[in-house]
Length: 378
Ligand code: SF4
Ligand code: SF4
View 1 (cartoon, rainbow, N blue to C red):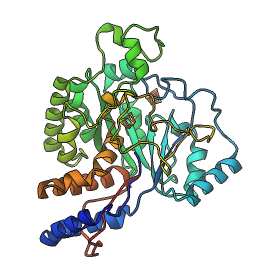
View 2 (tube, rainbow, N blue to C red; view 1 turned 180 degrees about the vertical axis):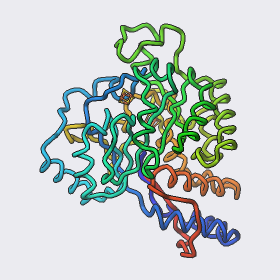
View 3 (cartoon, rainbow, N blue to C red; view 1 turned 135 degrees about the vertical axis):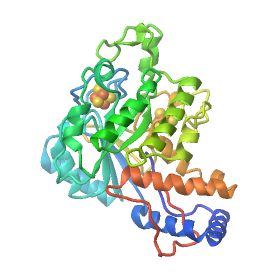
View 4 (cartoon, rainbow, N blue to C red; view 1 turned 120 degrees about the vertical axis):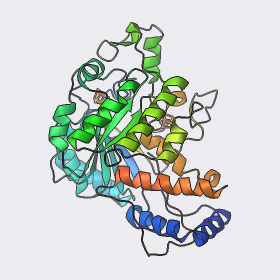
């Protein structure tokens, strides 16, 4: 995820929003609630551990070599000074990733002294202590034998034991071309277990693609490709995923956290991005590393001018849920062409809040958002 901001970028857009909300007071009140909850979001991303207790097929963290030679910082004073500095430069939303951040809870706890909002991307196997205030996104890749095949172990039951009833936790099913038919079972399982569920889409790393092409592979992260169970989405698997997610939304409205406006766009076979033919990178991705949105390694070193916080992913296959949502939110101009588009943009904002803010519920506020204001993530 990149920057989310709450101010309009042009007078024309501000007028357009003012006109829309003037005619739709209910939407104005919903948007005021979003703004009051989310405010101006200034995120950055931190890989805080170099180890993981799973071996997921095509893992994005252990692909490439950018995770190498970054020794994890354990010194509490150094960690404290680092996050104090992050807060001082304006970061107010922390994103903790790889490898498995639950294995280094001291870092999470120290970071929370300085910034209270953020999200931890975890595999759910190690319980994150209740005093750590961040949203927890718990990854799921399937159930039973499928999970064992894809991740090296079936850990869903343990994750449910760790997080049932925990308002921080949101389970995230990473749908790939090989497990798409498991959507109904995973949704039923989460509904029965009483844990909320959303959906991500598997994206290829460039490494995984080379392995699929026959390059010598790391057997820890490439067990299934040769067997013909590749995970790369096709137009058919995307269409099937959207059909099954739609059914899950209808069947388990209390469990499934999703957005129709997002589903329509993320499952489009064309994808979300313009790909630069020279670099192969998405030129219009809203989640690129920039002056403010930075990506850090486990040694707390700034990753430099990498393209984003998942630099090994092939942009042409990228449908990562958080990054994609941020990109869509940054495209207000396109949404503003029609009233229906602005309605979708508002729905996407509510979806962002449901994903990222602990305990958030859609609602309305009588506060009057400034006519020129726009919610943003950067
Ligand atoms: S849980 Fe995450 S870091 Fe660990 S192997 Fe799986 S994808 Fe990689
Ligand atoms: S992999 Fe590409 S499209 Fe995906 S978040 Fe990174 S820069 Fe954006």
